[in-house]
Amino acid sequence: MTEEATPPLYEVLYCSTLAQDLAPGTVGTIASRARIRNAQHDITGLLVFDGLRFCQHLEGPREAVDALMRLIAADPRHVGVRVVYEAPLEIRRYSGFGMGLAECEGPDQMAGVHALDGEAALRHFLSLVPSFDING
Image (cartoon, rainbow, N blue to C red; front, side, top):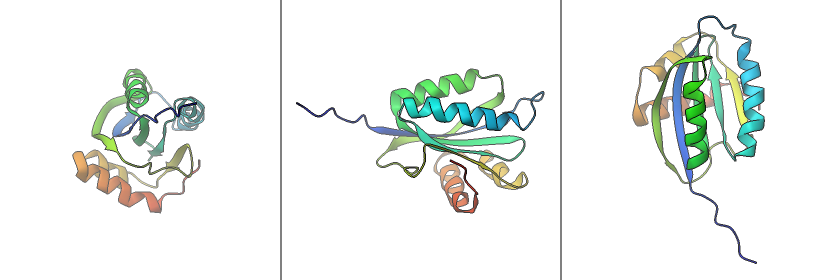
C-alpha cells in the first residue's frame, strides 16, 4: 500500500466588509457553516470580525483554498473582498483548531490590516492574533 502525498499548503489573507443590510450577528452563522465545509476540504484558519470588517486567514491545499475564495468573492454577505496576501505555506499556523472566530473591539485593529498589502498585511495580522479571544 502506498501513502498518498499530502498536497502542498497554500495561505490566503483577505479583507472584506459586511454587506450593508446584514446584522453583525450573521457572522456567527457564517463561521459555524464554514467550520463544517472547511473541515471537509482540509482548510483551517481564523476569521476576525470587528463589527464591520472581516479579515480571514485561510490555509490548506491550494485547489481547496482557491475554490473557497471564489465562493467568498461571490457571497453577497461580503463586499469589497480583497486578497492582501497569498503564498505557499510550509506548515499550518492554525493546527490547534479548524476555523477560529474572533471578534475584536473597535475598528482600529482590522482597519490597520485593511490598509496594508503583502507581507506587511500578513505580519500585522499575525501580530494581532495573540490578543484575540478565539472561539474555534
